[in-house]
Structures are given as C-alpha cells and as structure tokens.
Image (tube, rainbow, N blue to C red):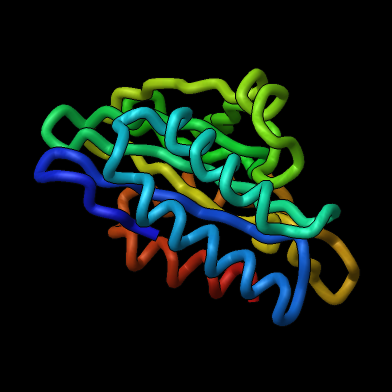
Length: 182
C-alpha cells in the first residue's frame, strides 16, 4: 500500500497475514486501516509499527500475526526510512555498483507481543537512494513459488531477475517478474 503523509513524504508497506480465509482477511483489513490511520501521525516507521502493534495485539486471536515491511520515503531528498516486523527482506538494486542487497532490519511480527519485546526487536534504518536504484518489497509467496520439479524460486533468482531488468521501468520489471514466476 502507498499512504500519502504530506507533500514530501509517502508511506510504503507490504504485509502478509498468518491465517487464511475470512479470519485472515479481517485481520489484514484491520491492519491496513490501522496503518492508514497511524501513518500520518509520525515520520518514524518504528513508532508507527509500535502503535499499530499495540492495537492489533488486542484484537487478534493468539497464533495469528502479521509480518510487515514498512518505510517512509522522503520524496525531495530520496531517503527511505525503513523497518520490518518479521517480514521478508527488501531487495535493493544499487545502480552505481550494479549489485543487489538484501536489506533486513529484523523485528518481531505484529500481534505476537503486546509491546515491550516487540519494541526492543525493531530497528530503523535510513537509506539514501540514487538515480537508477530500485527497491523491491514482496511477500514469501514470491520466493517460495515452486516450478513443476518442486524447485523454489528463491532469493538468488529474485536478485538475478532484479539485476537483469534494472534498466526497465517498474511496470516492465513487474510484468517480467510475474512472467518469470509463472
């Protein structure tokens, strides 16, 4: 999701709920609503995740949780402020070095702990984006996709695909990634 915060900042997140069917859908709907409500209150991803977690913990049944990669883009300065709550790492393509990096800020998933342990595990990181850089957020469904021989797609192949398509637009990149996954 993309949540405009103000004229200079936009929140960006990807999330994955542990749970299927109606219960999972309800938890994801609440999680999205909480982020839309809380994102505009702080330019700190860590603070926003903490607030969302405190509310979500009270509402979901034990055993359910939500992983989230959440960041705020400072548009004029091209700075990403990022944090993760138990989610897959972000892939960061650096055009200058022509290399992919897995960025993982650690963190416990939302809904597992009421607050103190959750907040201790969160780490916030700042990344300066340069021209030609690309960041990729995804769920485990991408890297765990299997071919007919039961071989998983994996992080390495995602990185390779990101590097091979670095010069393309985001729309072209996504189309080719989906085709490769299929």
